[in-house]
Length: 246
Image 1 (spheres, rainbow, N blue to C red):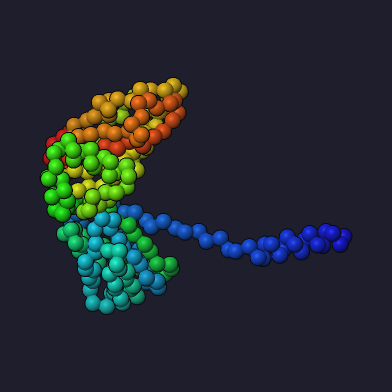
Image 2 (cartoon, rainbow, N blue to C red):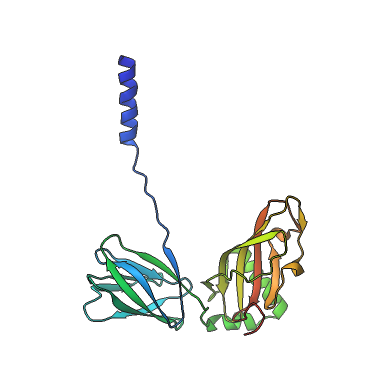
């Protein structure tokens, strides 16, 4: 009996001493139409945060009294609070000239964090010099290497990946991962999966479609084992559709 009580006491002590588990929540990612309007729920009891990868919020405005406080962050986002009890409209402007409005719907509860991605990549004139001062073939190689090493050129910003930006041969499937855009070019990363039970030879031309300028397999792989996966990078002209037309 004494041993049982000792074991029970030790178990209880371990449970009591164990730190509480903190579950971190990722920000909600929302795609917004350039110059358009969309709805977001915001907290009217805690601060809210909006940020746009690759861009900086420069202004946020609303009708008088709807925003109790607002502050631009050093990372380019905007932190704001509201005590409103009814829906109101927020107007947002960015350094790259993006503008949109948000129908904010106040609710009680924890502050919200939103990661906003434009459905259409904005113009990025700061990258034009880097893209135009080198031969086109060199540019494609430089951008592909930059994506692989995670050292993208200054001015390139994250954009919404193209779900159909690459041709998918039979026996393969792709999952969009991330994408970045400059002035003339954009780079999309995908996970390529071989759904066959046998290995398949990888050929760049099998994944080409109109608008694509370069296709690169990680580690210059030449085959993909059955059931295997790997990363695929696609470089294309910014602003071209899947048919190669602007």
